[in-house]
Image (cartoon, rainbow, N blue to C red; front, top):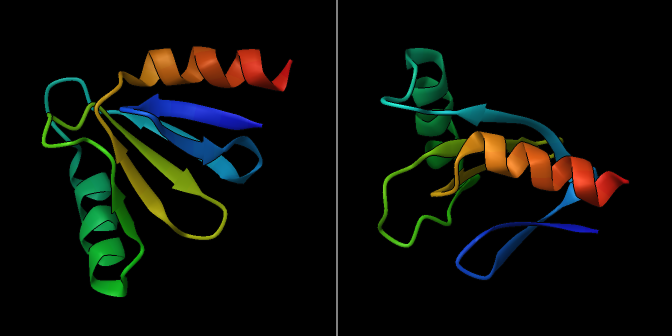
Length: 82
């Protein structure tokens, strides 16, 4: 099962550990997590140049940036898990 995260990009549902919504700005701890993931080569930017609206963290330590709202992703995740 896969989670549609926008712009025809998908993430494996079984690998998602958390989804962080970034309404107006990205919280400092999440920003640091993004910087660390970028330094380690574990950052995946799937925003297609749009504003980052949610950050998906996987069990493999990869950090995925999405332009889709966190609430929308959460609803899609619930639907896909049944």
